[in-house]
Image (cartoon, rainbow, N blue to C red; front, side, top):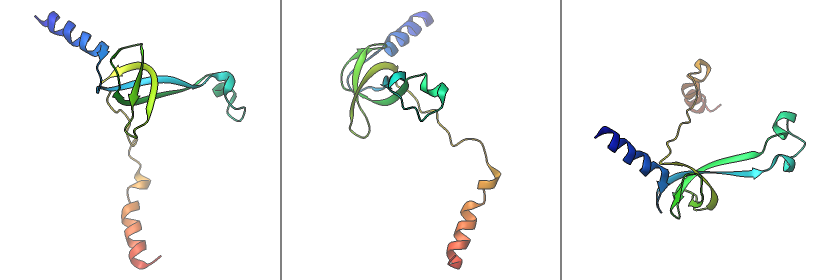
Length: 112
């Protein structure tokens, strides 16, 4: 039973249907197209983009599909993830930043 449920979940995550929240990948610039005004090691690799949006069409992982982004742009790329989560943070705690709000309120109140 457990194996059957697991295999059904896997098959669901390999294909998307229209309207699913997905992530695609595409190459913005090949390495040879990049400017010389960037570090040498950066010049050697392509500029890549991973972008999330809603699938405009059905597709399978690894296939090219078109998505509609939250900004209503239509972008084509290779389907990399289905139902991707956001993993960014605001980083670790910074003591120096912890008093900024209070300091700003005081400065504004005093007219500085």
